[in-house]
Image (tube, rainbow, N blue to C red; front, side, top):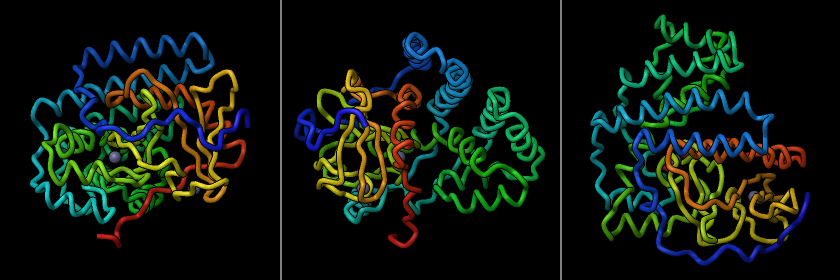
Length: 324
Ligand SMILES: [Zn+2]
Ligand SMILES: [Zn+2]
C-alpha cells in the first residue's frame, strides 16, 4: 500500500493541549472558508462534484443551526470540573450517562431540512420516508435525536427497522442534526478552561475515543507535527501521548502508517493488523472548526477507499454502559 513507515518521525512530542486553539467562527467566516475549500477540492477531484454539492446543502443548514444555538439556546449543564476530572480519569467520556436537555423544537426543523437535502442529493425515497415519518409524528423527533445524542445505535436501529426505515440513513441524519448541539456542549465543558483538575485530566486523556462524547475520530489532523484526533460527532480535538493504534493501542510491528500515494506523504493512513482498524491522518495548516471537519473527511475519501480495499475498517462505537 504505497510507502510504509514503521515510525514516522514527523510527530513531535505532546505540547500544551489544542482544545483552546480552535476559535469560534462566525457563520459568514465558516461559509467563506467552506467555499474556498470546496473550490480547491473541485480542481483536483472533479468526480466529487455531486458529493460536494450535497455537502454544501447539509453544512449550510448545520452552520445555521449552530448559529441559532449560539444565540443562547443551549441549556447549561451543571457538571462540576472535579466530578468530570474523576470521570475522565476512569476512562469514561464527560457526557456519558449525563442528563442532557435536548432542545428538540430547535433541532427538528433542521432534521427535516436535512432529510430533504439528502433526498435531493441521491438518497431519494429512503430520506423522504424518514422525513414523513418524523413530520407526521409516527416517529418522535425527540426520541430519535436523543438516541443519537446518547450514541445508542441499537435503540435507533430498532426504531428504524420497526417502521421500515433505513437504519444507516436515519443514524446519519440524526447525527447531523444533533452535531451542533453536542459540539456546543463539548465547548461549554472543555473550551477556555482555567488550569486545574479537569484541564489535567484532558491533558492526560490517552484514549482513541472522544473525551467528551466517546465517538471515534473521523480523522487525525496534523498541524506542525501534532497528531490531533478530531471527533466525528462533536469535533473535539485531542492528542495522544503515544504513537500507537487508536483503537487497540498496538504499537509494535502490526501497526504501520502508509502513504497510499508516495508523492503525497502529507496524506496517510494508520493501519493496524491486530484489530483491523484504520485512521486517516492528514497534514493541514490549521485545525478545522466545527462543522468544517467534514470537508477534511470528504477530501480524503480516496484514503478510506485504499484502506478498505486492503480489508481495514473502522470499529463500531464503543459501549460505555457498564463502565459508569
Ligand atoms: Zn466527541
Ligand atoms: Zn489496532
